[in-house]
Length: 180
Image (cartoon, rainbow, N blue to C red; front, side):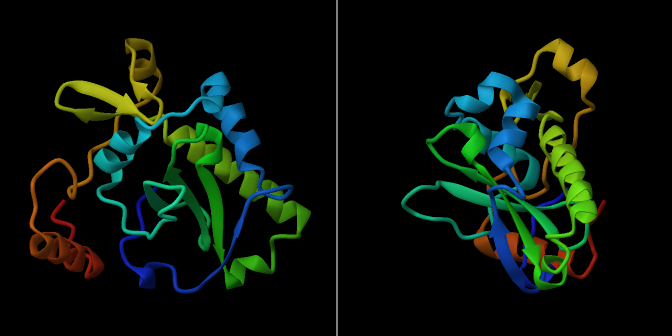
């Protein structure tokens, strides 16, 4: 799972979905429990630390920032927004024109749901801010750390960086030069 840094990473998005086909609020409650019913603005710290600055536009009336993340299915994307409403309303699905044709196929839809549940669970993997592990829900307990392997922070996050330096890092990534 990674953030989309360039519009060319995904080509054309056909649409966004939330509702009977992709019931993200229900899936969020299923994945996170009652905490999904509460506002959770702390998830902006996790998303920034894990994926770097948000490269997608967002609704300046309802959202603070938005990340468009890849999934294990080409053409299916997972959007996470930071807003003051309940956490369960911070998720949407985006898909390409090619994938749109399969959305109504119940067999394919089952696979998409499975992948979305995996995306929710992936956001429970901690990333460290200094020596403190956090995930989408906030500070992690030792029990959470034992269940979920931590991930490396984004190379775009945590350090002061001029716009030119950030754009150079993004350009390197676009060429496949990740310096890992």
